[in-house]
Image (cartoon, rainbow, N blue to C red; front, side, top):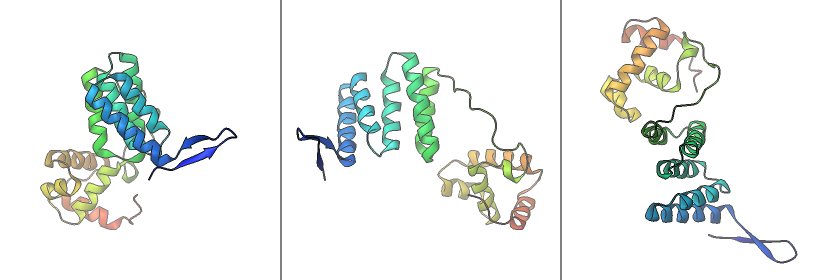
Length: 185
């Protein structure tokens, strides 16, 4: 439902957050049809004023895909990646990274490493989920289906986990995981 809230003595109105979301969606649809960068920019601006960060990130990625300006594309992609990573929208990160690669945009500096290089605290969220599923006795294809990823990605996560924890087998990994208290996020 669109709600207009009166403000000021002249009866000016401001849009509700719901209306700004709808406006962003309508402008993004228009941009997809026309393909114009200005239309994408308008959609991004509408989403900036709405409580929809993922949709804004998707609009940023689409705008970066269409613009001819390399600096603007890099800025939009960087902003989209930060939003996507913050909200944890894992499926959208692949699209943003594909546009980044296609445009030849190098990822910016990510700052100092926040995790240690080895040990349980060094595991990423994806690696932790894989460990939990290995401890439950699932195979790599089963883990891949559960996490919506490929068997090869699961194998890569396991290789990283084995190296970080210094274990050599799934059995040893499952035994170590069973001894750990479930304190992961």
